[in-house]
Image (tube, rainbow, N blue to C red; front, side, top):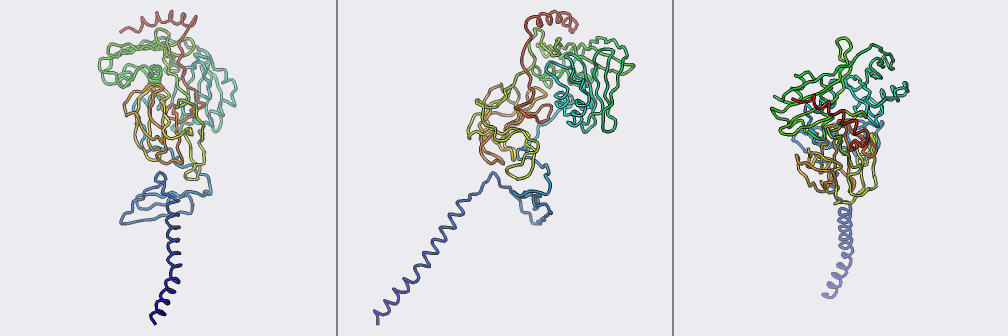
Length: 453
């Protein structure tokens, strides 16, 4: 009897064993599946759940779903229309602007410009954020505008949306071409009033700030902007102190009571014991009193070696993270994590921190018109306020923020507008030589004597 019971128990154990084995295999498969799809923290959006949760759903499958104070963006799929939304390379921290930025950008909507070597009207207007369609229409319909000459004066006026309203081209003192917007096209007219330019010398002392005191002395916003741009690589105008001095020579043309044109001939600014000069040469550019360049050259690439471009500058790129069309305002370089990142020019670090989808992020101001940014860094090697030189190592490339893999996102901004850093026209640091320098130094003798205090 005991033998029969023992045999029965043995049969039951044999019968139950496959169930335990199957359960164990199933558990291993579940664990393997979970570990095979790890959570990607770089692409996770934290959604705070508040006591009162309100959820909003729209018909657009790619529209964000609002949950309390947070947002969930649907990844994948295509919307009914390609709508430009925020880029995945947008930092949370914006560059703080000051009064000098407003002057540089000519917030008054009227800009005066002296044509320099290498300039084209198309490039000039786009550099100042003029509406692209207006620029194309103007330069296409009036082919003569391709004949701008070095040293000629041009000016234009835009509305608050940067649409071009009028454009003036001063060919000579008695030959002015004017192009005014009428409906959806530009109408050309000309003025032949004989105007004799007069040289004006304006001097002043710094009592509050350069901009405020320059305006009080009689300089226009446009003239202040020209001075600021001419000396942007040599002098930080924010650091001028009470007691510093400035002296300016201008060539002005007045039509009736209206200032039609103004050209900066020379400027001297005394900052403590140092003097800074900018003198206009025959090529339309400004140089110091020795004919040396006032510009700074830039590296085209922020890396020691040229790397493969994995994503180019494209205002309508299909975002690989969100799956929808978003502007890509820079260039992505495919480099491995830890690759040294270099500053493309001399400048001041204005931001160096972790900043949202941009990850570890550095922004460097070069002069007053140029800004470069470096995103998704693995490590930051500089601090805000630090002065860096061209070629300095500022960080190591990485994969921080919203990123699909190790790379460097690099942007170049001119007049606070993103441009393609691989094709943009960059300043060249070249001084005068030969006969050009000899003629310039002869001119400096007369101008320098008028700039005394």
